[in-house]
Image 1 (cartoon, helix red, strand yellow):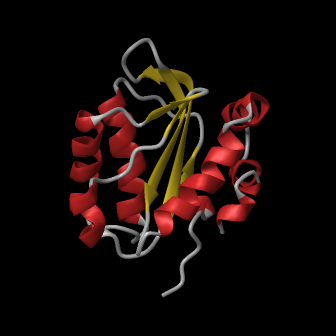
Image 2 (spheres, helix red, strand yellow):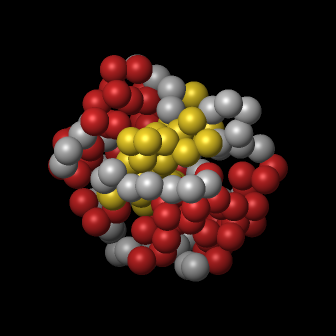
Length: 145
C-alpha cells in the first residue's frame, strides 16, 4: 500500500488547542483516522514529548512516537495542524504549526529533513501559519510526497 505521505485529509486549518497535549493528540488522531498508524501511536507521541520537547523553533513542533512506537506505524505519513493562535509548548515557546510524523522503516529521517528545510525559513513558516487552503500548505511540502 503506497499512500501519499501528506494528503489533504491530513491537514486541518485554523484549529485551536488548549494545551500541547491536545495539539499532539490532534496531530496523532489524524494519522490514526487516515490509516497511517494504530491508535497506540498517539500515546507514544505523548510519551515522547515527556522525554524531551518536540518543539523545533520558528513556531513549529514535530511530535512523533518513541522508538517503541515503530511497530504501530502502518505506513509513513504526516499530519499538519495549523494553530494560528498558537499553543504553549513550554519554556516560553509557542507552536503554531504542529507536524505529526510517522515513519515506516526509517523513512522518518528523510521526511524530517524535508520538513526542516521548509521550516528553517521564517517566511515559509509564516506562509504556513497564514495559509487559507490545505493545498497551499501541502504545496510547500511537495518534496515529502
